[in-house]
Image (cartoon, rainbow, N blue to C red; front, side, top):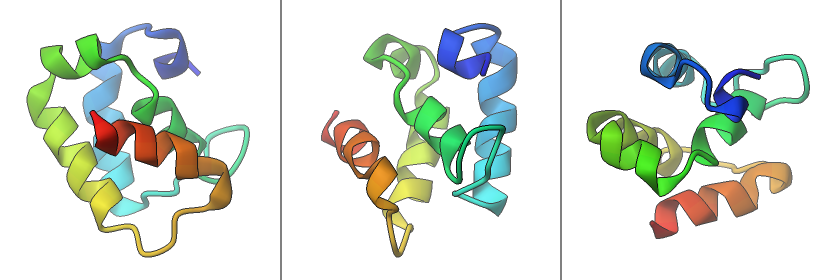
Length: 81
């Protein structure tokens, strides 16, 4: 939830990326893949501030065999940046 609100990103994004490495569709409180959705929808400014994490997320997403329909738009938007 905090990532979606841009709170504590310097501390939370590294933890989120680590969790996503283990399970790209990790579930928070809402739905399968909600952590990934929160990470993918951060602004381009965030990814300019944390380029290494952005590269890690790009790798994680590119290795997803099946993107759930609920995440397709977020994945495509992130990869288009």
